[in-house]
Figure 1 (tube, rainbow, N blue to C red):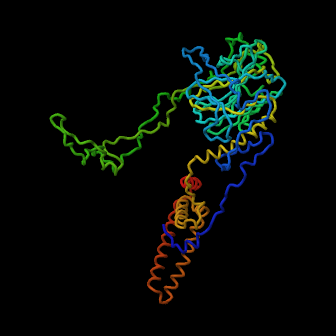
Figure 2 (figure 1 turned 135 degrees about the vertical axis):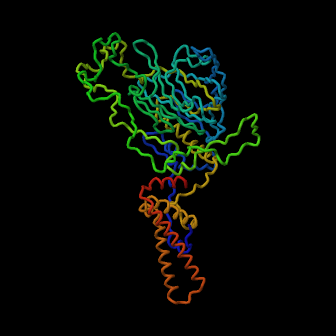
Figure 3 (figure 1 turned 45 degrees about the horizontal axis):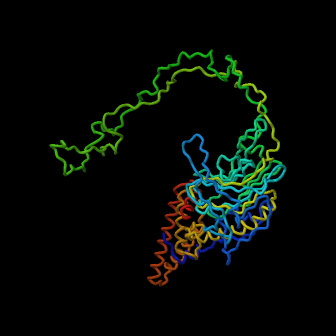
Length: 581
């Protein structure tokens, strides 16, 4: 539909307020989390990172800890790769840790020049490497803080990036480190397919049997699998509470006593395995009424449907017409051989005469549901007077019960290890802190991670192709930006909405009825001028006639749309907006 541009411009022009994102994404906050966390946790889709004129450079931290690794000179003396055979009990396959390790600067989105990462170099390979602590770490009665950075330079489809804190034993030999090496805590990202989690698993020793059992955190948080660095922090307090943080923000928290499976402490009572349900135990809550009898008039043999005896053949029913006829437009194929293929017969098509009447061919009375049908009789159910309830075995004291009130008193830790299998190469680790100071871990994050993270995000965003401007919905259009599109979309929206709900059409596109009213006023004025006897030029008469015709077109279409219904229009608005976006 077209409108007189001059009139439409005067009546439909209007602008909407434009809203822009304001704020400083790097105004890092403090509080109860690692400083700088706001930048990493905020939706990066709404933050535009700016690349600094000069990239920051790495400076070794002066922080002290029971174990602290930035992979500076001398790292080879601490870290030893394992080439042991992987323990594959129950399987005939034999795996060796053939994956290679290196210490190097990241080559993807390097946000801190000179900083080195430990890198698992091979795809589809088993990797194992470990470093012994200068002296064992005993977490008993202390806060334990574990923190490190993970950078997935080629993403992660399937593989692990978690660390293991190994139990301090005399049998701890780095060259023999494998999946069978006893560990105290396993912590960090792990992803394969739809499974994506930040592991927190600890091995708990049963004080009665001396056996160890893995305890897995319930509903672990998800890891980040893009190609920028991410910071993973685990804090376990002596009161058994824990916090898992990702990029400085809490991702999971709880208590070692009630947030893990299997639970640390077993149940005090268990079902008696020797108890059995008595033979005369009745656990049917309802039973058929033994005193009920089938009514004498209950006919179990009555059919479900019967012939409708009141039905009569429609007057236009063509009994002598077949339901199908040979296709009059079909032709015998040119390569058809009557001697080899037989006589050619045209395919059948529905008889066109039958489409115009109630039916063709022999007529029979239809069937209807039998009003006397009752089906097989069954006795109604009643409450069972002998019902005793659901049987459960009696409870007895659990002979294996114990209560560990301080599971946070982990066993001494003697080393750290990465024992991984991954389908992607170049998974890297940096800035490993294992100690007892939350403040020092925060300080380290400020010196390293929160310096490089915004730079890496800026590099990532610079690499992405510019997004094309998305079409605006009618409510976002401005008349002065594109008058033709503005008028077309507003009129189209009004007619679409008016077809379902006139009131909503006026609410969502009030400019259109206003424009129509304005046109009518203009037409009346022009008509009065032309009929008043004045000598209007022929061109003016023609212009007035055109305006009158266009206004009539708008009015007629709007009236036709208004008369079509009063259904809700909310869904239609959503569809149009989705289509425009």
